[in-house]
Image (cartoon, rainbow, N blue to C red; front, top):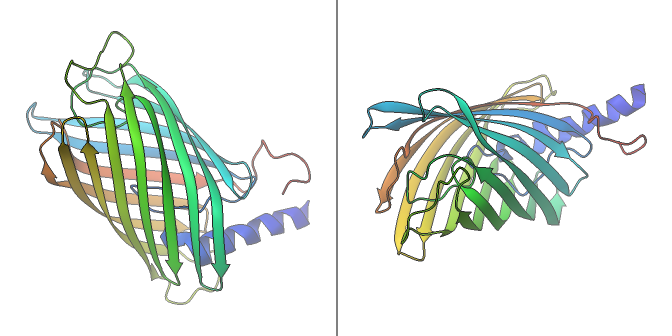
Length: 278
């Protein structure tokens, strides 16, 4: 038992503290996965300004994450919002990512993964932009490639998204797009510690991400920029603080600008792990 705990702890140190701390992006997922056999808890708080209604939209997305093995991880997520005046449950989703390519060397690596999400939602359809992570019923499928160069991580994500009618008779208006092509370009750099000594050191990462969406049925486009700061404590707890700002859009979005505050905690061993898997 003690030996098993040391093995899991060592994998977390090597996977998070030394190699991929700056690879845990805020507005996108990297091609790397969480440690095999581990479970993570994540709480995302979206605090977005809706100027037309002179109010703040708050979206809460709790998640349970499971590292099935070194190549596959799964998220179960819930969607909550205060759009109707009080915080209510609006839906749920499942996200999965499979890493199918990895070229690892000392202090740098290149990885690729395929991912998908299926989500249901009962909120009213209030914008033309599509987002199955909290707004629309539907699905998404895509690819992500991530390059780690010592303390710098670069990542490119592209995915197709389809929106169905929301539950509760909230249908997408006639003529409004149901399909979207999305891309995210991400860069993150490990700023602290300057010299890695142990997993007890706090990691400070600075990140910048460019987020775009095209609605091919109508030719509408959106483009955002999202700087963020990330802190990782003891290679186990993570705090993200980011701000998403619209640069361009000719599609209706009710609340495109605002903050994301996220807390994540990684358990050392998953309750789903079978004896001997770790």
